[in-house]
Image (cartoon, rainbow, N blue to C red; front, top):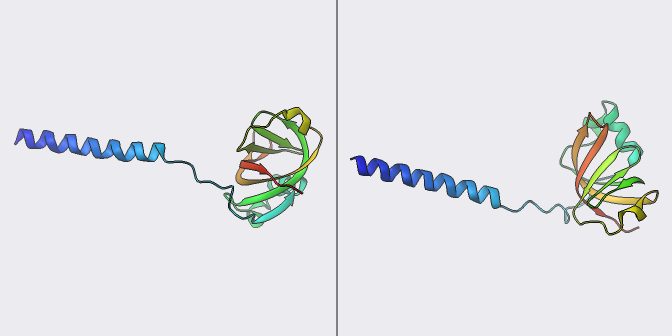
Length: 129
């Protein structure tokens, strides 16, 4: 009886561990091939979240396109003026060349960061004009 209980507990732990590892190593969903659901200017997007109109205009998780001027750029992110932070899927080569230029990016809407006053996008990529 005692051996059966230990066997059952060992089997249960193995199943839970296998499910946990499967969930942990599952690749993230690719949003790059999803269609753009809405196209906005950076100023419109930021204004929608700064006021209470964002729920009527946008849904978190939507893939959107945003056009605006790059305020700052890093190796893997852009910030569009007046406050749209976009985490890019591919690293940017020579990010300083983007600063001050007009770009159009596609990304998944994550939400609004109240601390920094920025709208957050992830899975960002450039859209060619």
